[in-house]
Image (cartoon, rainbow, N blue to C red; front, side, top):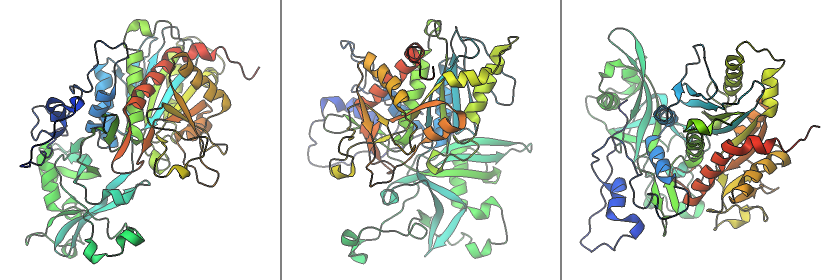
Length: 524
């Protein structure tokens, strides 16, 4: 995959002497974020001194560096899934195909992908018996963004523009005046007539949506910035050259060459090393080129796009890998530990790769069928679902200091204060008293902070994949999330400590939930 080169702008040079960098962001620490040329193909931040584990400290090691690496690799849902796949393979998990027979064994670790934008991974306890439950953490790989239209090429006033459509409920004004580019996947036709899927990531600033000068829009600061999303939110690619065909000359053809600018096709083909004629299909997202990084006076914040919901994906992924790294970690486990990462949550989850599809339910059934062997048991899958528990992990709304009145007075989650459990009496979240208690009991035992959120009665409430899976599969569910600010902006932020707290909470969930669950009986 030709997706991993990253060329970043150098800091602006000034004749004035720059102030000394804070110790946590020394020159070597910031080099990962600002160097103009990278010796390696991956933008890794795990070598930051500010993020390296302190050998003298008794605190558990931080996963923040790994999260930054993951975010900088995962510009699209396809890249997020591909990077998760790479990490699982490196951790010793076995890749399965949904098209093949599964031969699963207790103590085994497996995963599969769907559409390269959805992933399900699981580790089977050594003491698993048919009818035991699944302990699952589910999140989503997609984020609000702009996507290229099927016919993206257009000319406006002598400029080559790129037609886009909005995906999800983004804060679209934040996409103006950003250094943007394209990433996603291409469908290529080989010389032998076969077809293949290829991920692509154009790392240099390629397109931009410029705002109108205030001199031509004097009331913007008083009346608000109200762009028309069809006519004003069109990225600029290049100025028009004389030999560039116009739209009027192309209407009779349906080829890729005329539906997308030849210049864009040339850039894409050079990036992945193919001929422009080999590109027969594409699914590209508009992406911000600014890398994910630490920020704030004490480097206590993470600044990044796509925190909603890749931060949850990474915490879930790491907790599964780290809780099943060695054979002895599964030797006494009676359940199956699972992570499910779905696509299309931001637009309702109703797709083949979304939580509305039966992907997770089918995986649970196939796992049980494979492990049953010759033993026959009545209602094995139904008994397993009854014993199972789902953590629906999606980012939460942190208290905004400039808009405190937007929060319910007694439920104001704060940054750096721990994971947020979400409640809604109208079932916009799937949390119940029972599921909240079980999840909080894990935190109590491990001395981890927990917060709770309820939306105001005079405001609408968002939702998650939690109610979709809870009702579709019939599984006990708790909705939770890392508190963040700037949700659905091109550039979001959350607290560094909350990431580590969430990871520890998720890891403890995998390691001890089965024992806690046996102590509570509701239906008898």
